[in-house]
Image (cartoon, rainbow, N blue to C red; front, side, top):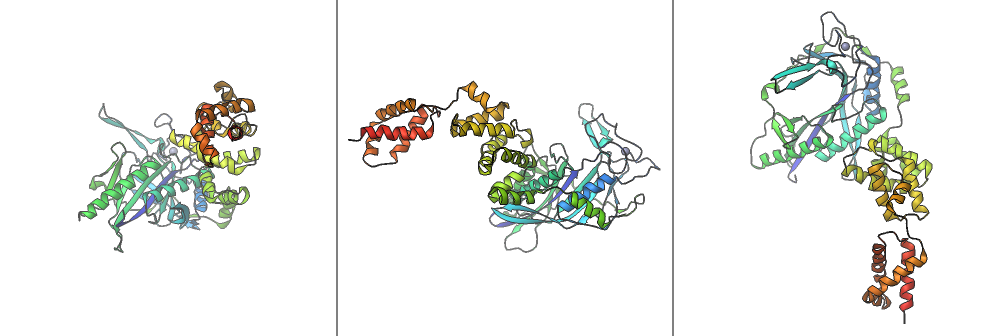
Length: 480
Ligand SMILES: [Zn+2]
């Protein structure tokens, strides 16, 4: 991408976890029998009237405040008109020119430097229903359970300049929302949906390139993959002097390509107009203050606290707070074992590596702070070495067993018997006379090799410090 600049903007749709739907009393619940959480209001029966759910408004304000967005004193709802079988009213209640809030930002780390991504607006919008296609019977069914459930749309400014930044922005938004406990942010299940706009232009060009909209990404990784693909596709076209069509493209996860959507569906004219059934909503300062005082500690603040009180590096603190459950796990650990640096090293090192490799979210981790600390204690009292601890931890994460049980089951006890280790040391020295001579003639780094051999022979179970002194002692005996 060296000749081109990339410009990306994201639109995030977030499903809020209120008890009831946005404008009626139906349960905002998922996965029930189709068409069981419906009523005349969400089905759009003539004469029924929507009423704004106050919990929906509170949650929405909470999110806006956490994103430092300015909550409007006055907002209104508009009808976004279009026809689709999953939309019984033929319009969606949304917000057009008087949204919930304007402005705001999210801070991310890009290329090891802090970067601020500005937010354009946050607005409230109800969701549509769901079509269920039965390919065999060549028919489609509609499930209205999702119709009228509360969404929040978060629109970013086109401040994002790479797919990686887009990914980080999404992670940052997700972690903020998780701290607020207003949505489960699960992209695979559709609680968080994201559309992206991307354009590229030659570095020498001032005006933005042709904008392409990307839809249908089902995971955070999918968003990044789709943007990487699109960035390359557009660069290739520009290099070959081919024009880029302004269009909406769908990400095909299976084929890992973006494909143009039919242009017919692009030129939407939603004919927005104020919903006559819903009054303008005035949000007074006391309500904003009240909700603001209820905000929990947010990731940025937690990060600062970890740096200040636990002496963590900026990087470590950012990784920890990026996941609410991991940050909580860390806080439990330091209460039991006040060595934050050691805990963070294991958490962001071996534990995250294991979870990432096995595609496991931190909230499904099979071990507990207590169990991790028990493993540290086994290291402290020299029952196991640091190297063995890694093996034990792996087993703990795979099975959920305690470190004690694993050590017993696998016979992993550390050898701390001096005479056993000294015997091993003598064997190693005798097996490696050349290296021993090297050491005695002044090549001190030969020592490391011999200690390594001893550790290998003991299958990592020898106490490393004892191994070191035993080798030294053994070599001393050889000295003429
Ligand atoms: Zn309803």
